Image 1: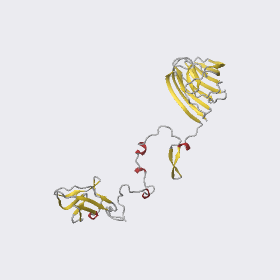
Image 2: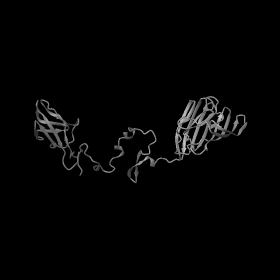
Image 3: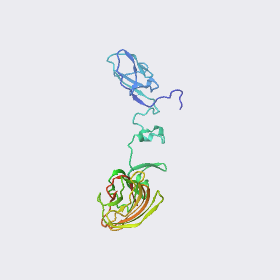
Image 4: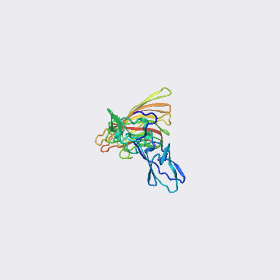
Length: 330
């Protein structure tokens, strides 16, 4: 049903704020929760008690806007017991606080404009990769469901296990990085150089920082080119029972001539197989030369599961800078 003018405010029951009588004053401001009250249609919606006596609308008081005026001035000692305002029947009016249930809300009635934008921006940020049991909300054919991260995360055969960028250090170690979850590992190294000429050495670690210094068997060759267009190469060479896993010819000694290389570690956790192999191919600049080198090495130690690897110089030179990333391959 349509209305001409203001539609009725109906169906809501309100008890207005308490009012203290003032000697010689008839008109008083009506408030609800500290705000001026005007949500009514007629004086007949009011129930007013003065000094314990119910007052007759129009005869004993009138209302206009947010002002209630008694028929005569009140005196000191008069008490306005309460003022109740009743809405007309047959309509809900303004709901009382905490009375609207879920069933009373029409589907799709809550729009984005009614949602507080601070729900997301004000919440705590998850700054790491979610745990497998962390949950997301998805729509499954229109039905909202929750799903564990384990069901939607990427399924790469390469798993990043560790990464480190350091400078001005004597060595870089990845301790207890290898696990029984993988038989193959890749280590990528970039921007690697020493403060002065030295030979990079790569050694296995057992548990923690314990270094393996025996049982390595290594073969190596390399080729190089110079600014004078000359080339050269080293035929295959080998060491038996050496104290380090891989030893490379000198790297550069500044940030503009670093070594980049790739290591492949095969089955370093085995305690029964002797062929715990390391392979390396790298390219690096050393002053005016450009070197390309390939090394094959295996360690004959059995009964020991290797847990990590240590990178250092063959002498006592400081590593100027290095970035290394370790991956496990399924």
